[in-house]
Length: 291
Image (cartoon, rainbow, N blue to C red; front, side, top):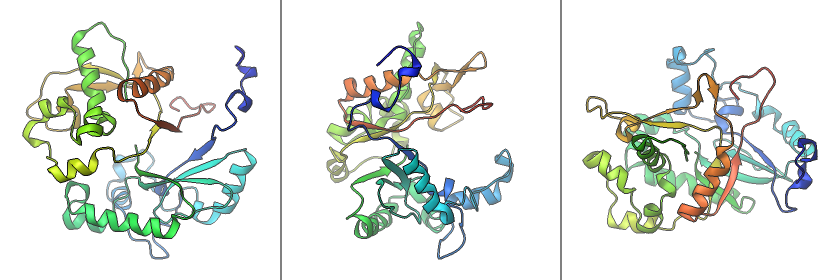
């Protein structure tokens, strides 16, 4: 690979490198309330909490992929894409692109959220299994790459407290790829130490089922975060307060650069010895200060 960016092209990659694009059902489909689709928790949130969304938008139309999928897929082919990663809600398996299908991209059916609290209840297991079985039956002959769930951190700091906060943040944010999950079917020790009895326990049978239960890890890398130690707040219980770390994606108002993406790949391969694929990476757009 040449040192000049002009020398950087598709031919800089191995012949078997898969180039693709990705999105999720709620983000692009539209047509949310027709043709038998039931409401998901995102429909309820965007309708009942418009003040939480900058422009009060929702996914009712999105980019209208529901109606434009043929021309959109054709554009992907014209761009030279090899694969298309999407989530199944009312998705379609499309020809001449290798599908990478996400089974859950945060769109819990509202009926299950109302019935038993969604993923906070073990009752979700059987319902999710039924949904997954249906997807396998309908699309298994055409889909070879399945991602069960959609969606680690790197820091350079001389403060021992902040370094420890980084380790905790990595354990909390990436516990599904942690060695203890892979080999023991359990949470990392940091999570046990800092969450204590509030951490849901796995039964012996569940731990046995979890050990070695995935074939690969798909990484969505967007930006780098700094992790900083914070004091325990026993009045506030939550993901961030349990980890006793605060995260920021910028320093002095400047977004942190993408160089830590390589470090993240090395971290996963060296520490956890995981096979992984890069599934999402942001691109820079003119006049866009955030992405």
